[in-house]
Amino acid sequence: MAVAKYAWCGRERLGLLRVGGDVLVLHAARRPGEIRDLTQLLPSPTEVCRKEIAGALALMDTMTVDRLKGPEFTDRYTGATAQIIEAKREE
Image 1 (spheres, rainbow, N blue to C red):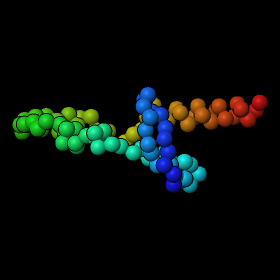
Image 2 (image 1 turned 45 degrees about the vertical axis):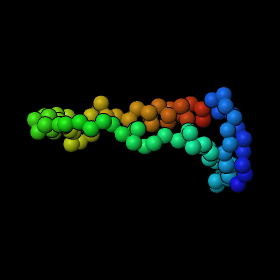
Image 3 (image 1 turned 135 degrees about the horizontal axis):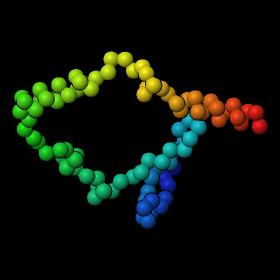
């Protein structure tokens, strides 16, 4: 492990640099002024009535799909990747 100085967002920063398997890992060192209180990130409390909950549950029930079959659920990425690999193999 080593202490490292690096530039990020136009500022010079300190961090810890270590080897993690086959990669280098940089842990950013933070100053107390850079760390935010987690309570600032919480959403504000809200009231939800039973009618709204029932409506949300009904909406989820109508949008739930038991089986993911059909043309709209076809994995096109894997097929396209296989075609690219095959084309490169033929070159």
